[in-house]
Length: 191
Length: 296
Image (cartoon, rainbow over all chains, first blue to last red; front, side, top):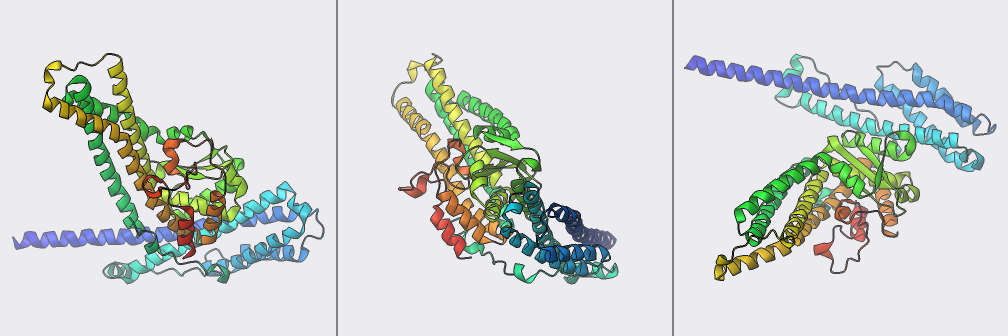
């Protein structure tokens, strides 16, 4: 009888251990996946920037200095080692800010704004910028999930045995930090 | 909070199905009693009709709803780059698969989402919405629709729509039967009990469509507030949705919308005056929604 109970307990512990381990692996995969989503968008933007340069070539005096800075930052971004997420995002944030000011300045060039190729390119770049911001949001959410699992009992036991490490959060640029806090209490009042 | 909402929606879908199902069977019994003097056969026929109808509706819901609203599908990004990109963005943050995208040729700005679950969802917007709203505002609207998708509101709506349509079908079906001489009502059941039964049956048949539409409306109103809040949670930008709602409010009614699906739209497509408002309104007043968004 006692033997049976012991066997059951051992089986339960093993089953829990396996599921906790799989849970950690799954969460870590989410973090990796969401990083690769960011990476896809960064590459896409890097591919779009030469188009921006060639499209604006005909407009000789179009913000040469800013454009030059964009190209420099792009080249700098490709030079950053692939696994250095923090530095990649730092350069990427600078590039985002510069691109944004470039877009704002395009208001002063009516004939450029009338160019369909340019407006298409603007849409593509805006889309890529938004996707970078949204994938970063997802990345940080999945990092938070992993961190919680690594530090909370009992899954931290498994995490320690298998040396799971928490990933670092990606820094969000100052101007995007002012996100409003959504309060659902006001909304669900007559449900 | 969100997961509570999703669980509650799934539960409510269950309640709606059971409640409407019982209503359908009661109507079937009433019709059977009235026209064939046999409530049992009424129930059987009602059950069969509803089951067939539901099966068709659930497997085809998106296509049916879209064709009722004269929407055409766009298959890739080139047809409407901005719209397509925004739907991609919102699907990304809401963590649902990319839904199908439809456009309705109508100058009035409006939008809706439909489908059985996030894996089989569709979003439709009018050409007026694309023309009048800027990127930020459009993002707020798409965020709202994507919240309906993620929260399983779309499934609840689809089922409610299908069930109330089934009730309408049953009632008209038996009317026709009655007028074409199918009545087999035997005269030996006259008398008090028979008369009372007949009155109850008639009342039930007359009230059924009304009950169906009230239930559908009540279900949809609170969902709009929640979808507004979830949209801001996705976009982190309440201003976009506020401006969008103002523009949608300040426009002419839609021409292409289907009356049965008006509860699906982000704002009432027919712009009915909300006077003796709340019971029959499918949507909360826009001013009220804006006020709640401004508080965030």
